[in-house]
Amino acid sequence: MERLKIGAADRAFFVLVSEASFANPFGQRRQDLDHEILGVTKTSHWSLMVPRVIEQVKKKLSVLDQGGVKRLQDFAEQDQAILRNVFLFDIFYGCPCSTHADEHTPSIHAVQAHGRSPRILLASNRTSTSRQVS
Image (cartoon, rainbow, N blue to C red):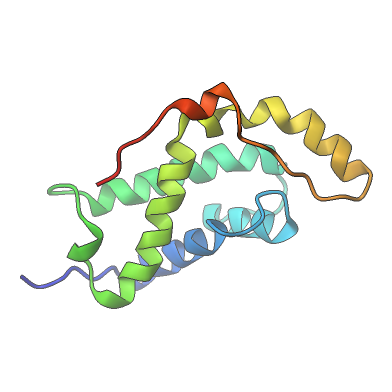
């Protein structure tokens, strides 16, 4: 079976998401990537951007899944590394624990006001939900 290849425009989008998957979610680079992913000017606050980015990634992945859900191995080798990170991004932000980020926003702003990078511990009862990935 011939492996699937993603088009140039989709590859450019997924490269940005791949990089965002490992960027500090509270850093300037991640904010810049979120704006690039959405194709918007830097007018929105980062806390408003993340849900829109997640939605956009899910839409792009659903297009890839037309005709049936695809596995990483279904894609050409040069696309697999990029898509692996995109799939991880999708899994992480699909996790119920990530939907409660707004609860931490006041603490994040307080830490940033003192010139330090925020660190959020996800060790709570919300992380007890597991997700099976095959």
